[in-house]
Image (tube, rainbow, N blue to C red):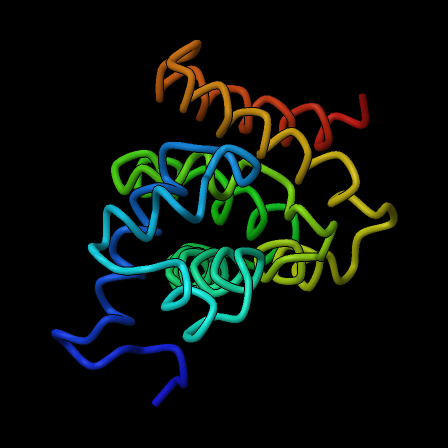
Length: 174
């Protein structure tokens, strides 16, 4: 069992539930530990006791959300042969899941410490056989699309079309 998984009914579980909701709706700098602890009906000391810091709490949540996404990305990618097809399927077909789970802000933002995330590593691993490091363009574009979805500046259809457009351009050599 993963060490972060809390026992139901514990303070750690209550903190994680509240923190997940906070990080779904607010960027890292905008989440206040005092407010988070108050919403969880405990002290800030409990947050530091269980997670050590705000960044550790954030990283725990982000890694779990990324793993949920990667599990789905792997399923979509497994249906295709080429690296380009795998990346396209992984990044496009799972946009509705990220949106419906309200993970767009969390996964669309860069890690506050600049850490490479699990999604970055996974998309990078799909590049085998490509001549260019496509993740240099694809991951920032994908994150931008997620943030625009979060801000309701684009629709899901537009989001999927934008990511598919990038792959079509790549196939044509443009």
